[in-house]
Image (cartoon, rainbow, N blue to C red; front, side, top):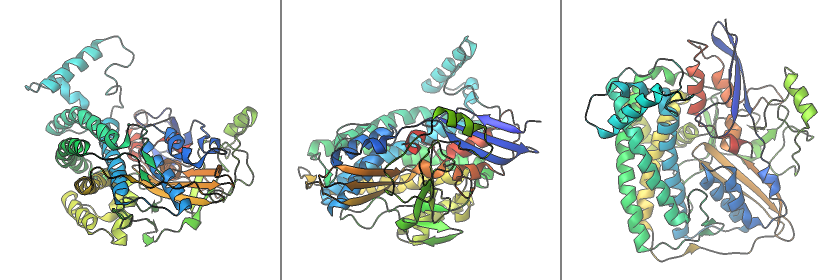
Length: 516
């Protein structure tokens, strides 16, 4: 009987993730998640002009660079005592919001849908849809070939219970193909005001440097109309159908149940955020308190002392252990096992991401549109807010996020003033500190900056969404958020542990971000 399952590497995520689970009677009793890389970008910023952080930190990740651009700009704006004018805030919302929409489609169709949808249904397709016929013939040729991995990324896959509704399978596969040009258009929309995508360069402390014209506003509207139709149509239909087909996954991958989010997507005045910040712990919501955030590296591959309960910016060094110690630690049952550190909120393990945004905003009562939408979907799918802390709850929350962000983007493009600069320039402050809070698609993202007497960066720190979610155990031995989600999971077939990969992919890990 298999008593250990190792998934290495985890596929269809960003970066290099390894996780090990131990089983008793086919139930996971322990789990360790290992981020298998080292970056060191935040410490590489020290000594440089504070304005470079918006560009350099984006290189943490090519999937969610917009979040780092915004957080870095917000941190410097906080140090400056500055905020963008109305046009600058609208432009920033358009860039960031559009990137969110693209990422939700990417996550569902490209990364996660194949965990539930049976791609082999296309082999029996006998209809007239040319796209499905082309896909059928391609998969058939691939399977008949001598390739090691034919029909990638669709195959190989775990042999498991996939969706049995052939109509849904074929519809979702067709929409998988349709989603690709929609995602391309959303990237073009980012580039209209961001100057390029990925890694938009126009988000700066003080606003956005691109001046909107009637021409690019009109082009943005044209692409947005098509994207909105897909999001409100096929994307919504497919996600709800998958949720209804797999109701048991509203009970799987629940984790600790503590949820952290930051204020996100403000109005043109920089106020009244679409999503509330705060923390829900043991079912109780409380306003956000940044003083409760700490990190430790007791189980991480670093040798700094002290290595626990460190507040942001309290240390300037981050020293990887040497090769001999690395080898020794991996042999210890309670040794260091990840390049990710372990952030905590008041000592608690927190999950961040779309569920946290939805649940905390619902509890805060700050967005009636979100409250109404949650109630509507709960009735349609047959769940309650307590079920959102789950695999399928995370997918449903992404749909709710997408629909609400889409409404904000549609409003901001209509209110955007053409030919008006949305940028205010100010000198870099000396001997100053600032913090920038935002929400990447994966969750709560914060940048802290400190400048010296020349206005150069003297210290910089990022705590990013996947660092929260994929963290190792801390000094008290508490497993990280994803580790806890895996514990207690029953595995039908240890040789095909799709239950584990469904749980991990539901959090949309980004290991490049987590080990920045």
